Length: 399
Image 1 (cartoon, rainbow, N blue to C red):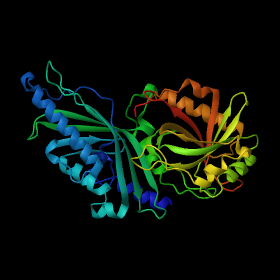
Image 2 (image 1 turned 90 degrees about the horizontal axis):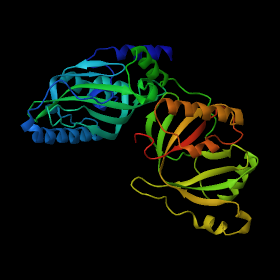
Image 3 (image 1 turned 120 degrees about the vertical axis):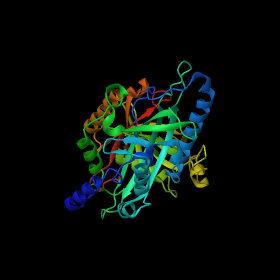
Image 4 (image 1 turned 135 degrees about the vertical axis):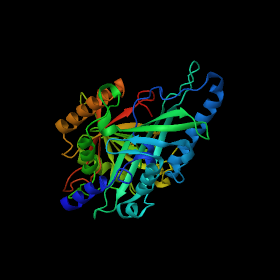
């Protein structure tokens, strides 16, 4: 593995015009928005400039969806420059080459990468100052993934962050991107949620750590409920889950809880993870198994198996509840040890500290209990996958 990673590091520095960079291609990772001092618009041209900025924002949205195929170069200055935690580029052709490489549209890219994709979560900024016509920076928030097929185990690296575009009047379309700065949520967020640059070595380590093979994992209990990754932070993730239905029961011993839910859901294919909630005073413990989830574009999961619905009418299942969780945003902290109380509560404490440091609000009611998820089949051997969960409220996060 060391040889493969050494070769890959060399590829990162193969050249600033064609080396690895989420640059243009993902237009990702940005800084904190600020007004551009690089150019100003005559006040009587402000309505026209506003229209041009709005058009640029729509172009950026299309470029993210298509992974910059095509990349509309008329909106970029010939001398446009780019900087992210690992790479710096200058010149519109370098941008284009970089995009094509990551998206496997070049010979080099076809050898190293596949399945690159970027999801745009939001695009803000670009206001035109009424007094001097200056254009504020455009900020995008995104998630990026890319599979490194040059390595035998074909790992997938994931990044989330923001991009800051410095925009000035000019060009055939009325405005031009003059500079782009990208920041990664995993390494660039400072206390309070602001972004700042870090040493390039930190970025390279963050990337290479995602390429290490994982061996000896415990068997999964079942297919997972899918989610959208909103943030890959330092020690935590933020995910958006679709609406899903689940069966929930109170339990005393976890193995007994598994047996009871297995009986309730007989004839179905429950999903992972099993989700437990334990209140701080130990007055109540519950276990839930997801059963079905809403398809993309739908607001609710499909109806459950009619046999399960009939089974729930039997008084012996009176303690079991089958209900639907609406789509929700969840902060997640991972651990690999057994899901015993000291381990789970320590992971919950660490997650809360990380969220607070990064400026994400934690709902007050979440402090009354700890919620954790287990993905592994019970009694299996190997490296376990456990998580603590905190459901976030609208307005307490940037998504």
